[in-house]
Length: 295
Ligand SMILES: *[C@@H]1O[C@H](CO)[C@@H](O)[C@H](O)[C@H]1NC(C)=O
Ligand SMILES: *[C@@H]1O[C@H](CO)[C@@H](O)[C@H](O)[C@H]1NC(C)=O
Ligand SMILES: *[C@@H]1O[C@H](CO)[C@@H](O)[C@H](O)[C@H]1NC(C)=O
Ligand SMILES: *[C@@H]1O[C@H](CO)[C@@H](O)[C@H](O)[C@H]1NC(C)=O
Ligand SMILES: *[C@@H]1O[C@H](CO)[C@@H](O)[C@H](O)[C@H]1NC(C)=O
Ligand SMILES: *[C@@H]1O[C@H](CO)[C@@H](O)[C@H](O)[C@H]1NC(C)=O
Ligand SMILES: *[C@@H]1O[C@H](CO)[C@@H](O)[C@H](O)[C@H]1NC(C)=O
Ligand SMILES: *[C@@H]1O[C@H](CO)[C@@H](O)[C@H](O)[C@H]1NC(C)=O
Image 1 (cartoon, rainbow, N blue to C red):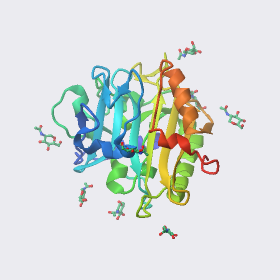
Image 2 (image 1 turned 60 degrees about the vertical axis):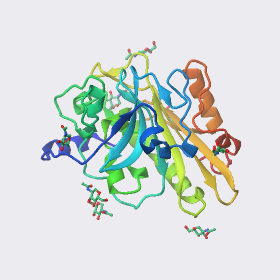
Image 3 (image 1 turned 30 degrees about the vertical axis):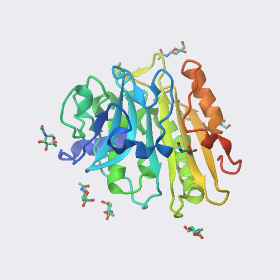
């Protein structure tokens, strides 16, 4: 989604404090955050997240809460000031539009005890996270690219909750509004058609992340990731099997987004993350990457 114009209009709005309450947790299993992971199993990313635990000096687990309800989960890298991934359960959407929501930050990442998600200032620089200021006037035209896109959210409040800067990375604007956006829509259609729970209700699990670059930053503070990736897994009622799909794209202008089997994305990320076993979803999801579904 394109965020630049959005920001300009946002600056004109009277500031208000939304009823958001995110929580930084030790483990995703606290505070009902496991509900956003298939079978309650968090991804395994050796050296970052193992058995749902992280090195708290460098990474924080955020159970994203908005208007008194937990909405999704984010693993945040406080050194690079971008998320490693956001994870959510897709249950279809009510067809609502992108909300008029100003960008927010997570006070807890800067040691504030108050758990309320609050609006980002426009001149503030936050120690352990990105703020609006980091994204203003950047000559590279880096937009605020959602990991959990508001277009995959089920209702108004969940759409609003995606507008926290802990859920976005600097994403080349033409990539964000181009092939990545097309992929998000296509995956949404696939999940709506092919992913159902036992009551025939739409249900799928998605994990979307970014790989930090070695030397590229926005405002000398926020890592501009080198690539972005996304994977989903769900039960398909017709075949009565788990199906999955995955995508990735280099974070460049006019970049293409490539579709690949989940197993291949696991392998690709394993090579990037120290040649160790990255597992985004449990083994069941690797079994059936139905050719017609990988889209
Ligand atoms: C918060 O949630 C309540 C109950 O769902 C709803 O009535 C209210 O409009 C929401 N408030 C905001 C600001 O979104
Ligand atoms: C925390 O933030 C909320 C919303 O901004 C505010 O209403 C509340 O008074 C704050 N609590 C403390 C202890 O600062
Ligand atoms: C992307 O393209 C825009 C417009 O052509 C240009 O201003 C910007 O520098 C480019 N950004 C990157 C990262 O190449
Ligand atoms: C969601 O927000 C839109 C725009 O503000 C509003 O028209 C709509 O009634 C809201 N939907 C619900 C279910 O509250
Ligand atoms: C599931 O719901 C769809 C419509 O959403 C309907 O066409 C289909 O027949 C339903 N399947 C079962 C097994 O109820
Ligand atoms: C980062 O390093 C790569 C490879 O060494 C180089 O091609 C690229 O130009 C560098 N980018 C920046 C912004 O310094
Ligand atoms: C994306 O794919 C198209 C068609 O294959 C190709 O022409 C274009 O160069 C690719 N874009 C980039 C940035 O690699
Ligand atoms: C979910 O967990 C149960 C119990 O640990 C296991 O038997 C089952 O295979 C898992 N299912 C998936 C899809 O991972």
